[in-house]
Image 1 (cartoon, rainbow, N blue to C red):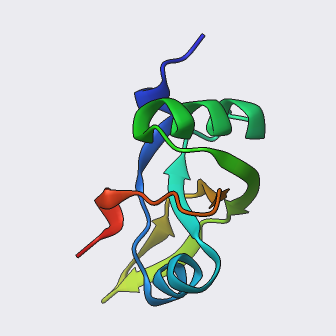
Image 2 (tube, rainbow, N blue to C red):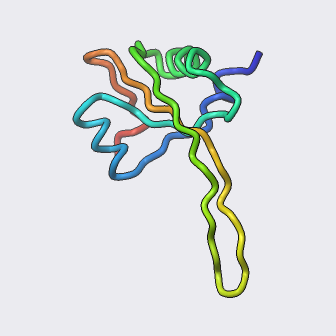
Length: 95
């Protein structure tokens, strides 16, 4: 069994994720590719001591990139969007 800190790799802080946080109380995380929704829910609840109502996952595909004549790909990853209960918040996202 993997530990909670292995499953949650870090927050995703973009304009879109900040809008989700402010309007719908949804927080976005980069997670382990092999983690399922139940493991993600339990990890977020254990680490941040909040109540998670639902989890949506997205497999982000690798993106083609080029710098000069060198070509390659940005790595693929999995992200999770967690909806928290009313009144709960995560201080790690506060700037």
